[in-house]
Image 1 (tube, one colour):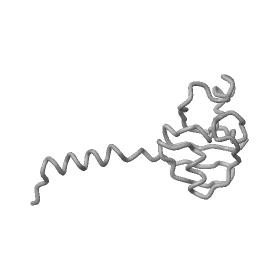
Image 2 (cartoon, helix red, strand yellow; image 1 turned 135 degrees about the vertical axis):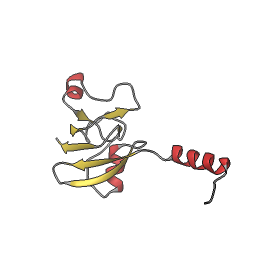
Image 3 (cartoon, one colour; image 1 turned 60 degrees about the vertical axis):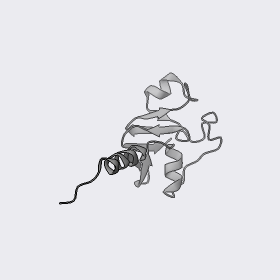
Image 4 (cartoon, helix red, strand yellow; image 1 turned 45 degrees about the vertical axis):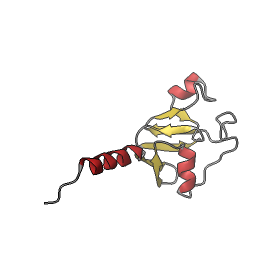
Length: 109
């Protein structure tokens, strides 16, 4: 049986801490599934998967990318994205700046 040194255990732990969580995303309208790392926007993940999604400003102000979460939750790096409180309560999100917190399903509006 091969034993690992404490240094290699620490290196493995450091490597695993550096890997972002990756969630499953699904576009309800098309059935397109994609990987959605927790450290990048939903739009970036969709673009990497070859999914066409409208976008313009990429900073949460123009609302071109607005979608609605059917399931799941997102977080924003800015204190208040370009959504009203009512829109947020109804599951609307801005994929250009929203990061996933779990697996999710999104639909176009």
